[in-house]
Amino acid sequence: MNNLKIGHFPPSKRLGLIVHALIVLALAGASAWGFWNLTRASVGPTFVNFLLVGLITFAPIPFFGYRAYSLYKADYYIDRDSLAMLWGLRVEDVPLTDIEWVRPATDLTHPLSLPRFRLPGAVLGTRRHPDLGLVEFIASNTRDIILIATSKRVFAISPNDAASLVRTFARATEMGSLSPAEPLSIYPSFIMTQAWQAPIVRFLWVSGFILNVGLIVWVGVLIPSLGQIPFGYDALGAPDDLAASSRLILLPLLSILLFIGGLIAGLYYYRWEGTRPLAVILWISNSVSALLFLAAVFFLATTPI
View (tube, rainbow, N blue to C red):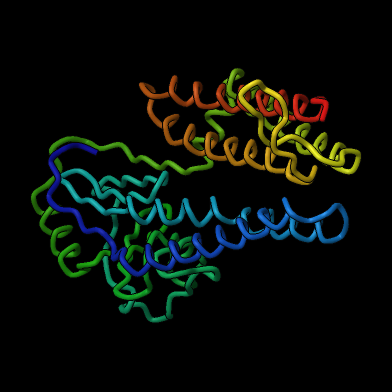
């Protein structure tokens, strides 16, 4: 999209950000509670229960965290050549010449079906309408939805000032295009597919995954066979603070947390050609940190008490 912006019309964000922040905090608290009790539980059914609580409540955090980030960065732009919809890693830039009409959803004869899984700040997904065909939602709420029809599909968006967006679109159309614009459609899955095509990225992702899986399997085998492990050392390097072997589970959990964080951060930087080396460095650090955690487990397991 060029720099001659006529206007931008962000969606409402406050309620959605609050809801997603509360969900992430609740999940993080439950996950931390599970892992904290896991380090104190003896090996057995209680240990497994706390492990499941920690893992199950942690798993959705990246999903809701990305939804919050997407909403925070969300915006709709109109310039002399195109209308752009930005939603996290999702980018849709539609030339004005490709847009057939723009109108409120309330003008429809048949009501618009909404995505089944939606939250304040995240009305996302696709639904089929009997008159319009496929409709893709890139919206934060269900109020004042504006429909943008192209030859391929219809987009449903929710600008804070819907009436102003419609007026600005009409004005931009009357002014005419300065130069031909090319349609642009980027999905988060496209970035992952593009990264996966690079051999070095495939190697780093697969090696990091295997190292972390191997780490958690190894620790799971070691814990029942160990009574206590050193979790602290004095100035001379001798074991100083002994703890239950179940605390060893913290190391693979921290390694997995770093792996997921590095993977997501790397995908963010991989979007631009100039910052792709930073993404590769992050993914290399994932594998290196997993190796360091493996060395730490070996050292703790073999240190005489």
